[in-house]
Amino acid sequence: MTTPIFVKSGRIQKAVALINDLDSSKFPLLITRILQKFHLKEEVFTKEESSKLEVSLSVDQEQLKLILQTLTFIFQQAAYHMAKPAVLSQQLLLIDINEEKVSTIVQAWVANAKNVIENLKKKTIAPKQLEDVNWELRLELAQSSLSKLKTPLGLLELTLGTGEGNSEKLQMEFSHKELYSLYNQLEVVQSQLDALR
Image (cartoon, rainbow, N blue to C red; front, top):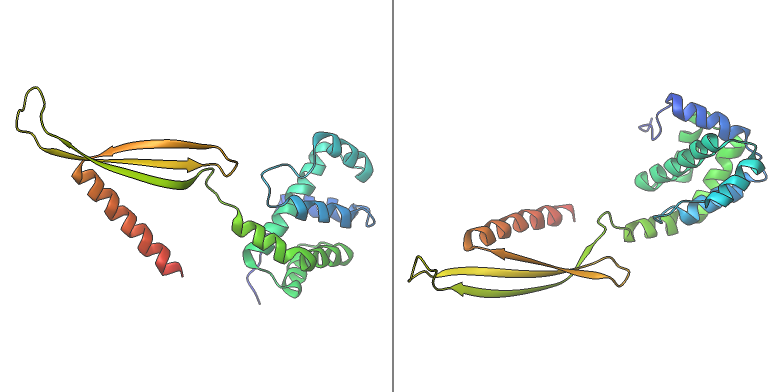
């Protein structure tokens, strides 16, 4: 038997009871909307839409929030495990979602899985990404207390972008020892990334 994707916790059971009671004619539309907004950093429904949805589905605000969080979690887990339809169906039945809702969820997953996974691959966990690197070497030749000082300094300027056309410049100054330490850390990161391929 495969490892369970979902744990049958009290919160999941409460959500499953609410999901099972939802109007079957409105459920596919709800699922489709969740899958469309799934990868974005925004709420699935606006406050106004949520209010209308509460009335339409005969649930209160907290119940709707639990339903949306649980359905989103189901698709997150399906994406993470790249769940095949039969496995997803089996896993949903194990947490007592009724067969009609399971069928709707699985059909929506089959129709949208490729796009969801592609969009999630493009999504980053970091709010800013490195766009450009500039560097400069400076040599400090003297200080007021030391006349024959020769201290090399490395200056790095990183241009960080948010992906929305905004960028900022981060400037850092390194001694030889500090720059060498950074280099060694970057080598470790690179070797770990290479090992994942």
